[in-house]
Image (cartoon, rainbow over all chains, first blue to last red; front, side, top):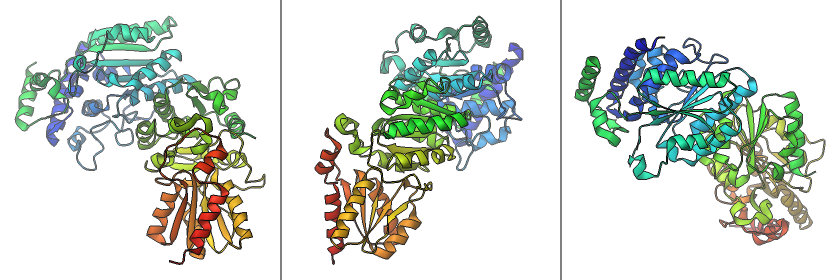
Length: 276
Length: 309
């Protein structure tokens, strides 16, 4: 799909995120909205997937290690046709298939259960290793958070991925610079993320995470790198805004991690998204 | 045979037949004997370094890809250190991973308190659907592994690395998830698991000399417990002594107590670690320190049998 055609899809997904969270009254708004562009590029352009055959052999996979972005993933999967949009309004209601954090045994299209931070990245490394052993040619995508990167397990996984030359692994860092208790830099010294990932042996790129043209270009660079027999795993750092595209969420800053969405806020957000 | 040799030998045989088995080590492949597999199966053996958390979640990722990963490290690192990874990435996500913890309890010997897990069974028992197998000797390990590998969900195996006195012979028919009645008796039921089965066997002979006819059960699987075998025995003897190489809180004694309290309350006592931490020492010395020798078992059994309250 052309990049221009993807733009309205991002609006649809943002609306679905807000509407689904509003249906239960509150939820993980900020970190769902910050990854809409990468989710759109992956599910509507890049990934070899089939919503009618979600367990297809040899498919590309996405493991959203920052599992609290569940509402963002569900809105994308619904928009892509994995399940009806009406299902989104069961979010976090008792017995739902759509819990706060991604669950592969509940939600069609979700490739791994995540939510305890750091673990999904390791599981993506395991899946990428599995794909290498099977030699099925799949690409394993993973999205991690910058708050999540406080976890030591992230760096354990990174060292193994580069040691094992998992060039079929493409990791995105949702670099929105915020975590629950404040800015990342106020909780821990995050260091220079580009140099850090580069030194951990990743083919590292840094792009505006809300510029789909830039994301697509970075993925094209990955393909070219692999064709030239580049054997490093890949890191694409997405410079993002927590709560992107919805003014009440952007203004809430770190408060957008999990926040109330009233009917009024929802109406306001839907109007804004219509006007953009 | 050392149990680690039995482990490597059996895994090699299984890996030749089953190309889905993948071995993950965390810098203890030499200690655990799995290093011998790397040459024959270079694409299915990986040493992740000293990073057990990554190893556990990576194994779950491999499992989502249709592989049967076997992760191997010392018991404290295979359980308490990675409890959350096992609970979330493996158990909650319903992934089939075989978790092998070596040198449980006092078999950690000179590695001492930091490496001496008296709580691993407690940690693992509290994770829903986790199967826990406590290995008695090399013969049992070799017979159990094919069942463990083929079981559809996660299994935790606790096993010593080094040689242990043999309890079972080559004709032994291992029944997965089942206990074995090693000796029938009428006065008291002794239930033991893992390395304590041998100690309890010696104790049963001491007791026989004193005229006490103990029934001895090897609880090969701590979770799920073989309720049928255990209840059948205690309905006959009405007294039970549990022997475990573990804290008496959270392990086999707790499991047996939970069973009998709800289904057939009888007097029960435990021989095991009485809520203490580990320490360095030889196996025999540690048995004495924690009052887990055959003589201790016999003494506790006598007291239980003679208790008229």
